[in-house]
Length: 157
Image 1 (cartoon, one colour):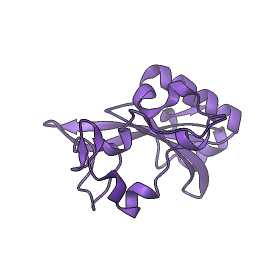
Image 2 (cartoon, helix red, strand yellow):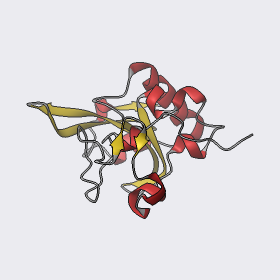
Image 3 (cartoon, rainbow, N blue to C red):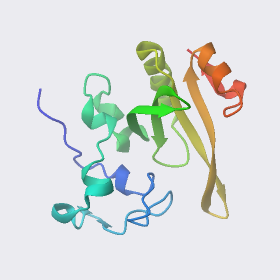
């Protein structure tokens, strides 16, 4: 199997991830992103660009082609910790995770037996101002994070 490449996907540059260095945040893409992609690709910074690898690029067995961020609406971040729990984070490439992708995330959490955290961005006057957290995880995970994520917002696997 050949190694995956980003192809036309630029979700990580479109502002859905944060980078103070690149003045990038939700609703504000990287200043180097142009219609054809990254305008400084050969000279892009080590942090965050060179070191960042999305889960879709890392794991073709777990993440099928339709989970590429520009197709699925999420950027998968693997090998993360959250409140001392190993988790998978699904960062929405937009305001929220599309419904059909949520089903994939639910199945992924059950298959891997690892909580999957995702969120919906909150908006005020056209600016993203916060987020509401959701997760798929075990009852034990729901109990452990009940003060961070409302119990009703942790969907049991």
